[in-house]
Length: 458
Image (cartoon, rainbow, N blue to C red; front, side):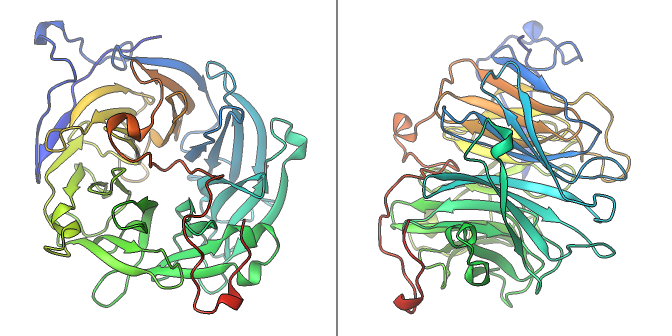
C-alpha cells in the first residue's frame, strides 16, 4: 500500500521556514493529508503488528544481519495500562511481523513507574544478546535495577531465550532511561547508559555476560557543564576517523557534549554545544558519519531538530558551537523525536507526525523526501500533548528496511522507493552509523591505567 505526500517544515538557524519537497510538485497536484492519505507516494507500508494498550510501546532496535531478522520492542506502563518488559518480533517476512517472545518483570503490579524504555542488542564471543533498560520507582521492588540482559542466540526458537544478567546501580536508584551499545576500537563492547547521576555510566558487556558484574562498570562520561552537574538524556557513540578517536555525543543539562572515550576510564571533553537559543536540556544527538554535522533534539512543543556544523570546532578555532545552521520539523505545532542517520537521509520517529525522512545532503536546506503517519488518534491529554505516536525508529542497512515503534499502534515496517540499503562509502562517507560491526577486529589495544586490571579480549 502506498501513501501520499504531506508538506513539512524546515528552519534555518532558529527560524522555521517552509521546505520544498524532494521532487517539486505543482500545488494543484498535491493531495492534502487525510486518514486515507497518510503519507508520501514513495513510502510503502509493508506490515503492521498492534501490540496492546495505548501508550504501552517505547523504543525499539533491529538486528542488522539478514539471517537474524529480529526486532526488539520495549514495553512500558503509562497510567494504569501496559506491560513492563520486552517483546521480541520476527521480521523474517516484513509484511507479516510475528510476535515470538515476551519477557516481563515478575510481580508486574508491585513494580512502580515505567518499566521498559530503551533496548539494544549486541554480539559477544559468537553469542547474541539483548539489553532491555528498566526504570522502577520508589514504593516497589527493584528501584536499583537498570537493565536485564537476555541471551537470544537461539532465536527464532523462543524456548532458548535465557536471562543471563541483571545490571544494578544501587548508588543511583531509578534505573536506566536511555542506552547505547558500542563496539569500541579496543575490541570490547560497552553499554553507555543514563542514570540518576552526573554522567553516563559505562559497562563492559563482555564482563557482564561472563558473570563479573562487580567489576563491569568501567567508567563514566561526565557532563561538560562548568560545575559538572546535571545529567544526560540520550547519546550516540561512534568512531571518528579524522582523529582516530571513539567519540561520545551526549545531550543533557545545558545542551550537548562531545567526548573522546578512546580510554573509557578517562573521557576527554572535545566540543560543547551550549548557550544555544531555545535549548536548556539536550535530548537525542546524532552525528553524520564523518562527525562534521550533528542533528540535535530537545523535548518541548514547537522545537525542531537543529542541525549544527562542527567544522569550526574540528579545526580548533573554537570549542563551543552555539548556533545551528538549519533545522527540520514535520509540523511546527508538534515535536519531532528520535532519529537515525544514514547519510544523507535522516529517519525520524516524529510522535504525532509518524515516520519522517529528510535529506541532509545540503545541510543548510533539509528537504523532506518521505513520510507516513502511524498514529491517527488524538493528542495526549495526560501529559504534554505531543507525547503519543511514533517513538522509536531503526533502519536495516543491508536492505533498507525501515521499522517504527508507535506508542499506541505497535510495530510498523516500511520501504522507501530508491532506498535498497545503505553503505556510507556509496555516498563518499565513512561506513559509520549506529549499526555496529560486531566481528570487526580491534583497531588499537585496550587502554587502562593498570594493564593488570584490563579485562580479557574478545
